[in-house]
Structure formats: C-alpha cells, structure tokens
Image 1 (cartoon, rainbow over the protein chains, first blue to last red):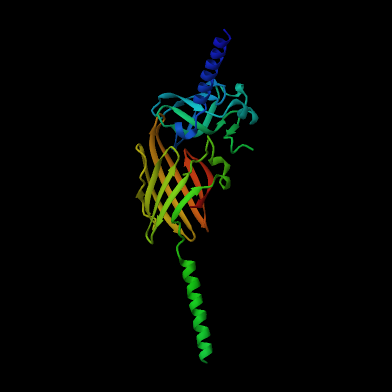
Image 2 (cartoon, chains in turn purple, orange):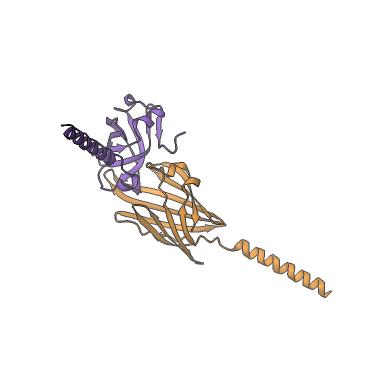
Length: 129
Length: 161
C-alpha cells in the first residue's frame, strides 16, 4: 500500500513538474525576435498565474475586425513589485510592445505595456529599477 | 642645410601618415559576440525591449560591408551593404521584407533599415537605426526601433573573437 502511495506521489510530482516546465519556456523557443510589434486595445481577461501572467486584449485592426490577443507578461510577483494589481487590468485600454509568436497566432510576449487611463507602465524585469 | 631638409622631410612624412590614418575608414571586420554584462539590461532575458543578434559576422572592403546576424533559435539575417549609402535588400527569414542602407560617418557605421511583415493585426512596419562604433576589440551598437510613432533605444556591446 505504501509503495502504491509513494508511486502515486511521484507520478503527481512528475506531472506537475512537466506542466511547470511547459509553462516556463524560453523566449527564443516561442517568440520571433525579428518581429517586434506594438498593439493598442482593451483588456478583456486576465490570467493571473505563475510563472507568467496572461493578458487577453481585444485589438481592432485597420479593417475593423477585432482580434483577441494573448499577451504573455511577467509573473504576478514582478507586476506587483511595480505597483500593478490584478484589479488594475480588466476593462483598461493598454498599449503594449513585444514580439510575435513564431506560430503565427495572435500571441505576443510583452516587453512593456502601459495602462493608458491609469498611466501605469510595466517594463520587463531587466529594465525594472 | 642637408640636416634641415631631412628634418622637414621626416616631419612632412609623419604628418602625411597621421592624416592618412585619420582618414582611414574604421574596420568592423571579424566575428563579434554579444557581451551581455556590458550591454543594456533591457536587451537580455526573456522579455527583451529590442532584440540584438548574439553574434555578428562582418566582412568589409573599401566599398562593401557584409553582415550576418545570428541569434540562438532565431532565423539569421544578412546583408551586403554598400558603404556609400545605397539601398540594398536584406536577406531575411520567410515572411519578412527588409531594405536597408549603410554609411560610414567618421569612425561610425550607421545602418538604417525598414522591416515589414504581416501579423494578425495587419501589416507591420518597423524602422531601425543602428550606430556602430569600434574601440579596439569592443564593438558598441546603439539600436533605435521606431514603430507606430513610438521609439526606444538600447545599447549592445560585442567582443571580438
């Protein structure tokens, strides 16, 4: 019985570790450093989780079509260190700078973003004071 | 009289040599590797502000400068620029179109380029300006990215291999 429990714990541990590794990937594996992009839109949803917060932004294209972008940002701890709270996001207009995903989907890695109305800016870890 | 003539000749020769050295174009040839410790903190890590190549392969002649820029897990970009500032096509990964021009300006090399590609947000246009400056075995590249009316500038330092 103890052996079965131990094996179960190991399996759960491995599954969680794998999920964490998949979530914490490198920039160069997922994003195209040759394709920088600046977007302006409205935040419609927030994924406030580690290791990266995910912000979902509706951006209206020049042809009027609205595309929802998934924006990968730093983790909540880093954002909070810069004075941002979960409540600061949803419904806000945002200007973000980052890099496109290699797979062509509306996904971007944000190096910085500005919450327009609140005039709050997030910058990447390395630029942060 | 003879000694005086020799002294003047030597002085003139040295002066001419000094002028010649001062007018020689800077040489950026070689393989240059990014020195993260000496570069702007905002260009490294998982969320770079401006992407810099991790390595530059440069070949230079009196008229041309060939640059191959490579980065880990990123498609390389390369170009053979005419140093008189003529516009050339940059060899870019599929889906990216880029033209650029390079010009020697004193001890500096100034490269300006315009990149365009499509995205789910429509067609994207980005302008870059790079100012290269070499001091011994160190190359400093100051890069400005301008997009949608917004500009930012970062600095990278490369070591000669």
